[in-house]
Length: 317
Image (cartoon, rainbow, N blue to C red; front, side):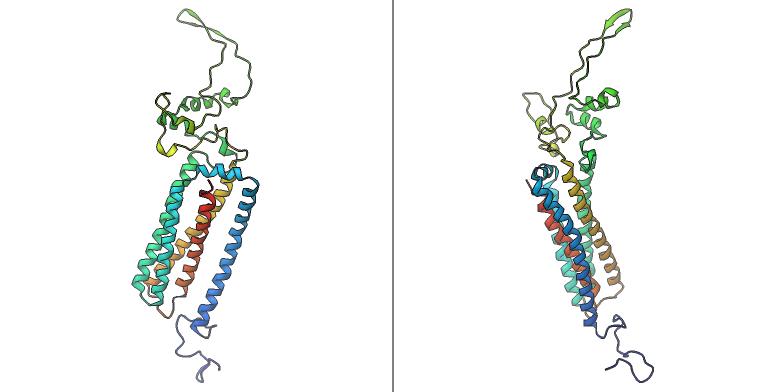
């Protein structure tokens, strides 16, 4: 039967305000919206699926890169982030259930908790990223360069590298430790009327080649300074003899996958904030809660992707 009455060609007088004119029933509109969201999420699975395939290929051919690189990831922070996202999924599911019952007050509370969960996740990820950027634990050849703050860090931690870092401004500091250079020609100087002959023996290196932070965390009997707890056991990739070739590739994959996931978390937080505003305006009821249901689907997929990323990146070793 046509939806046109005999008075003016308009739709039914009982047409719900949330029902678009091209749908016959609210159920039809809801099912179409859910199908559209699943099609969109399928493209998200394809996007991350390509990254997971790249991960699988590299790990199959170069397992040593992943075993080595995972040492630099903080498993504690990764586990906390996993718990945070799982809890946020529970609150989002609760918000959908509350919307189905028409309890907008509970919906707002649960949406706010979900938003805070996403914010907590991003704050923890910021702490992880900040530590890695400060120590040049990044993608590309920058991974093998000395951090710019190494001199200050050496002075603070007493790790014995401060002197070498302060000497980086000199031309001699640019020469690798393994390069063979002729001994300098001694030059005499007159200081306070005395002739001083400089030694032809070049100064010794600060430490033996291959010295790592892991080896510095030792004992009082050797007089070696003790590193802070957070640095203990984390090798310095610039001086680690166990570092595999192209170790930076792991961190290229790490930042690509976790960075893209972080963008999706931010988008999800924006969607949740938008749903909160609409809920506060009274746009939803037990007869119309489609946006909340679809937003919940997106958030669950974002959480699911992290559940795969955490063991694949953090629990390799």
